[in-house]
Image 1 (cartoon, rainbow, N blue to C red):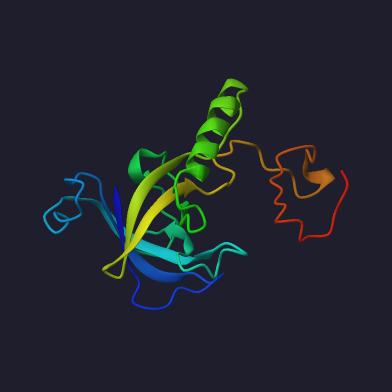
Image 2 (tube, rainbow, N blue to C red):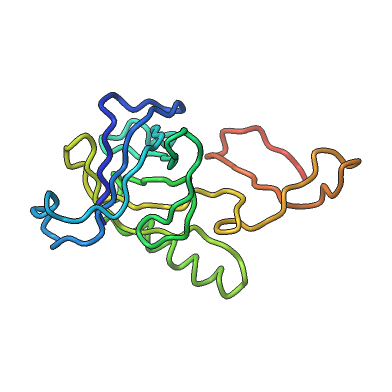
Length: 182
């Protein structure tokens, strides 16, 4: 598939700016027919740069949030993936084969599904950003609590409010955070 994003400004880190996303699924594969290819879906998004050490790579990664006309989250299934509003466009800049992460995610899914656990799904796509070809990307499900993603209950705010024993999502980012013990 092809994702076409129009933003018209620089895309910052950690501060989503508005844009428009158009999804083209059926085309001849040459990218020469995109002007005549049917647009499967188009709508407003919020977009920001994604990553820590990779945020300054020539081929940036992005976090996108699908939105409705009022600016609220809109759940939609991009490129045959289950419907949700939050996505990551991973630009495999340091992986010149473009398949290492996809291979890792695929193997992880095979192992996880057999164990009844969730692993992010992905789809290859090509990205155009403000009418300029940005390259081959990997569309990833952003990890979040949702029935189509990580289907776990939210813990209660306090012990008096209910169960605190599970439902946590923990991020360990390149060992930059202080340690903790459970």
